[in-house]
Length: 394
Image (cartoon, rainbow, N blue to C red; front, side, top):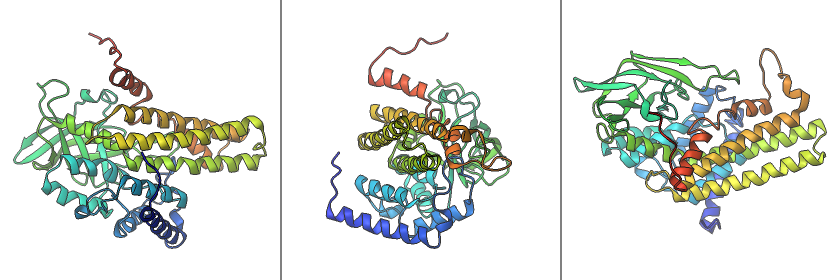
């Protein structure tokens, strides 16, 4: 893709930079740089207020039609905004799943009534979402899901369990994959439901991570209900919609997250300077290699995003996920090596971690969620390279 910016695009950059600088140096200075890996629990109410401020100013859901709260922004304009957001130290987005996953899914697969009901509230930051995909026995093998739903008096009644549900304890809605025909083949008989979280029959249990925080949760459904019309796509046709959501997950907003890795790289350099090992030739080489790989990550992601076709996973999207997840994990390893013996000591009692330590611990998950590295290699081998699939266990 052509990354030369026009005069209009540079004006867009100037507007974004001015707004972000003004707000993050003024009323929202307290959330600047907060809410990243291992810090996602911090200042939630303040960051939700920031989300609503973004929405009020039109800086959320940039690519969406103006009708639903967006700007009809081009891909380059989205990239420009996320570059400026990372440069300004914008906090971790609490509306990430709504804007990046369910919003594009409803735009592409939903009804007009669903677009009018849900999209403006996502764009404004009013309603927050979580994702009900993984289960204890259905992670990488998502088609093995057992959560079920049936229609009763114009409502779907849902029973089952989801796990690793990020931000469920803060969310107003969850998009849930349910089995609605137990006799259908594995990838059929699945429906894609939109479920309100604040109701009897839903229990959320936070899972404590190795960072000491709880970004994700177990969610139990025991007779939870949602209206019959809160289904995206056809009854028993949810698998296609679910794969579309996974494709949108690789979109421009994810690039926005990845661009913040450069801020982490700069933090590691500051640690190296403080410890006096920034002049070590091996450390310098590893720091510069990380910078090179971060640049490769950005351009690989741009190429991947430009290849997305109507919510369809492509070869490029799988390659991009494998690359950035491994890179981010290795950036965590570099942080620990730069810290040296200090890496073994918390900043304070009982478990007060430094940013470098949080990066190291949190990035263990990057190569697991959203399709583990092993699964991505299978996808690349079978779908991109045309290699024979793994033998099936009978």
